[in-house]
Image (cartoon, rainbow, N blue to C red; front, side):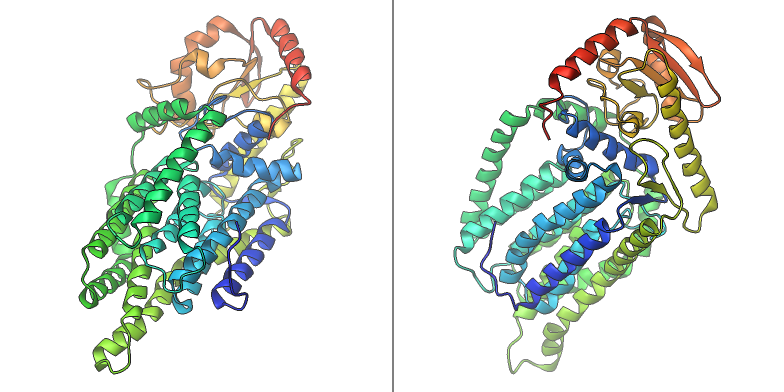
Length: 536
C-alpha cells in the first residue's frame, strides 16, 4: 500500500531511517542469540518449521496464539532456509509492513516533535529481543507477539486524533490502515485484536470519523470471513483459547503492585497530560478514550507474562500531548502557553525509557550474535541458534545444559533402527523435529505448559496429542519438570498401551510405537507424494 508522502518530512525520514537501521541490526549478524526463555524461542522456530513443511496452525496443530505468530518466523525460514535467521528476518518483515501505515497515520495526525519520538519508540519496541518491562540482559525473541501487539495498538490508538494535515483520499487510507492493523492484531494474538475492535467501536462516537471507522469494522469482518475460508482454523483456535482460559493463571498480584510503584512516575505524567488536555478541551469521547487506554492496557497486562509496560497508557499520553499542542495560539497567558508548548517535550521523556532499553537490547543482540558469543546448537538446523551469557552464570549454565540435552536427543534419534519418522518430546516444547530436520508429527500442540494451556482437568486427548507420532522422547532433565511430570501422569496409560520402551540413556527415555515399521512406511509414502507441493 503506497501513500502520498513528502520525502523531506522529518516523520517520513525518521521512520524510514529507523526501520532500515533496525532491520540491518536484526539480519546482518546472521544468527539468533538468547540468554533467557530459550525454550520459548524454540516454540516459534519449531512452529515456523512446521508451517514451511506444509502444516497450518490451528488446523494441523493446536495453539492459543494466532497463526501469524508462526507465519512470521516461517517466512524468515522460508526466505533464508536458516532456522537461526527465521526470527530476525520475520520481525524485520513486520517492521517493513508497519512502516507505510505508520507514515500515513502519524504524518496526517501528529506534529513531528511528538510523532518522531513515538515512531522511533514503537519501531524499537517491535524489534527489541527482550520481554517488555524486563532488564536488557534477558535477551530473547520469546513472547515477541506481545511486543508486536503493543506496538500496533500504540499506532492504531493515534487514530483517535482527527487528521491535522489530511491527505488525498484520507478516508480510504484511514479505513485501510485501521483494518490492516486490526487484522494483524487479531491473527497475532486474539486479545489484542479484541482491544483494537473495541477502539474502532469507540470511534463510532465521533461524527467526523464515524464513516471510515464503521467501514473499517466491515472490512475486518468480511476479511475475517475470507481468511476463514482459506484457513479453516477458527473453530479449533476458539477451542484452544477456551482451554487456555480455563487453566491459565496470572502472575502474583504483588508483582503488579510493585510494578505500579516502579512505573508510577510515567503513569502520573500521563495522567497529568490527560487532565490538562481535558481542562483545555473537555470532551466526553476524550474521557472515554483515556479510560479505554488505561483499562484495556491493564487487562492485557494481566494476561501477558509481563508486569511492566502498559503501552496503551503511554499512547493515551501521546494523544493528550498532541491535543494540548493543538490548543496553542499567539497571545495565551503564560501558564497556558507553557503547558501547550511543553507537552511535546513530555512525550520525549515518556518514550526515553522504552526506547533506550529496546535499542540497548537490539544492539547487544547484534554484537553477541555477530561475534559468535556463547554456544550454538550442534544439530543439523541449529548451528545459528546460540545460547549466550550476560552477567548470569547460573542462567547460562541452565540453558546451555538444556541445549546439550537437545543435541544428545538428536544424536540418539539418528542411532535408532528403524529411523523414527515423527517425534514428540514430552516437555514444554518439542523442538527435535525442527532441529533435526525431520517431518513434523500430524496434530499435537505447539507447546505444553502446566497451568497455562493444560492441567489434569483440561487437556488434549491422547488421540489429539499423539496422532501420527512414531517416537516419544521423555527427558530425564526437562526444561519444565512440572510439565513433564503432569504429562506422564495424564498420558502414561496411553503410552504404555501403544508404545514400547526401546532406549534409556542418562538424559532420555525413548518409546517407539508398537507398529513402527508399518507407520514409518506409510508416512514415507505420504511425504514422497507431498514433497513437491509443500505450501508456505
